[in-house]
Amino acid sequence: MQFLAKRIDNYVPQFKIYNVPAIVEEFKRSILKEIDYENEAMNLKRFSYNFRNDETVHVPKLYSKYSTLKVITMEHIGGKKISDITEAEGFDLKLIAERGAISYFKQVIDYGFFHADPHPSNIYILDDNVICYIDFGMMGVLDDEFKQNLAELIIYFIDNNVNGMINQLKYMDMIDEHYVDTKSLKYDLTDMMYKYYGTELNEVYGGMNDLINPMRKYHVTMPREVVLLARGIGMVEETGEKLDPTFNAVLVCKPIIKQVIRKKLTPLNFVDYVKKNIIEMEYVLKSVPLTITKTLYKLEEGEIRIKIEHEGLKRITNKLSVALILSALLIGSSMIMTTDNGVMMIKFPYLGFLISAILAIFLVISIFRDRGI
Image 1 (cartoon, helix red, strand yellow):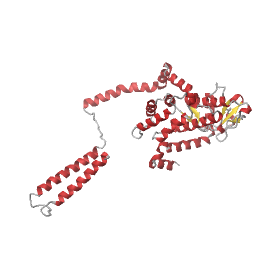
Image 2 (cartoon, helix red, strand yellow):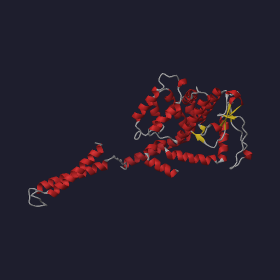
Image 3 (cartoon, rainbow, N blue to C red):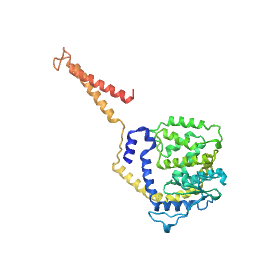
Image 4 (tube, helix red, strand yellow):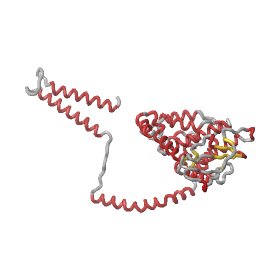
């Protein structure tokens, strides 16, 4: 699969936007994790810790004493699959859809550790409409920087800020301006926003898919985290709409995302950043004086060298060489006409002019090709 994925990515441009090698690599990792019960046990512990104070989410208890690399032992879960519940059984479908979405966006935005396979068979509903996730073999992980960037991207989407969305995608290294037609992308995103122009937020449906679709159309690099996340959000949105036709994922996630943005702007966040990077900052401060000293010494000794690389300079040089040879042949052939020497045909130095004509045609074709004429 990896071999085919690389060949598809290299030779089939239409599939490049899907980042097939990353998808296959993530599939490989996920399969290996699915059969690694020790890894699943660690995921279960971490997930349980994140929701330890949330009464709307229940996490199965792990029995570590009876778990091994080949066996994982957990609490037996009753309840019913989320796809099988009905209002006649006393379940509040609207509340469950909302709780499921809130719990999922908390996993993504607050904790950066989310269930990557939240299909209906992996979500059970217990008494009092409590959500219970099972099967923690496949999990996604987001670092703090990616979480904040993702939150800002979604805020730009909610606020209909197309320029902000494109700039954010560039900042997240998902857009390479050499390969992505940002103008066309901007037009498509603007058209998408007109769909929601004048629409109340609670009337916006399928917003997450609308955000992902233009990325698929253009050559937007999709990191494996985004691939897993898009899949997970799509499942949550689909399940929520089946439970409650008025369910809206955008409306549910907006307060959670705005809370992350507010947290980012607080002084405590800056203090936390300094604490996490203090060692690296110390290294930089120590290395700066030494770097300056070395640079000044090289400058004093005349050892500073400036290297300039000009793209296409070699081609320009080759054309210039051909032009000089062409000029020399034309001048030489013209001079031969005034003498009786050289290869003549009816007193005409045809060989020199013939070679000149061939070189001239080659030079003109080369110039036209480079200019795209």
